[in-house]
Length: 213
Image 1 (cartoon, rainbow, N blue to C red):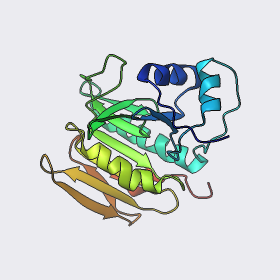
Image 2 (image 1 turned 135 degrees about the horizontal axis):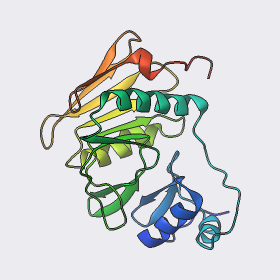
Image 3 (image 1 turned 90 degrees about the horizontal axis):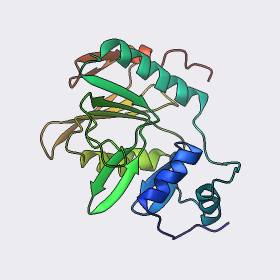
Image 4 (image 1 turned 180 degrees about the vertical axis):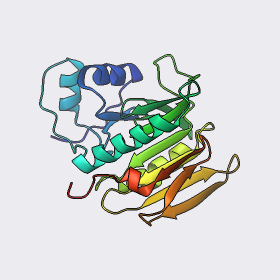
C-alpha cells in the first residue's frame, strides 16, 4: 500500500471513527493513526468509509500504557468535584485550530469543565488539563507536535507528558496567554500538583502496579 495524499472531510473522519472506533486523528484533511501520527492508506480509509469489516493493523497501546491511564483516571475521579469537572480517557475528540489548520486530537486523559463547549460535531474545544502517555513511536508527536498544538488552546492550563519506560513526567503549566512553565519530575517518591483542580498526584499512584508490564 502507498501513503495517501487524499484530503478527507470532517464528515468522513467522523463516519470512520463512528464505525471503527478511536484509532484515528484528523490533521487538516489527512487522517492519521492516533499512536504514531502516520497517514493512513487510501485503501484502508475507503473500506472503512464503506463500513467493510477489516483487520486494523496499527500500533496499539501497551498494557503499561493502559494501566497508567487507569491509574490517572482512578485518582482524578476520586479527587475531582464531579459538579465542576468531567474526565475522559481515550474517547474525547479535541478540536484545535492552529495556523489556520483544523486538527482533531484524542488525548489519553482529559479533564474538562462540566460546561463543555462543543463544536457541531461534538468535539470539545475547552479542555483544562491533558495527559499523554508516551509510546515508542509518539515521542515526536507528544513532545513537539502536540505540545505546540495544545498550547494554542486558550482554555488549556496544564499539559502533562508521562513516560512509560521510566518514572518520569514533564508538566507544562500556563502562566499567561503565551508563557508556560516546564517542570520535570523523576523521583518516585515525589508528586505532581495540578493547581487547576487542586489535586496532588503521587508518582507511586501514577505508576502503581506497572512493574513487569
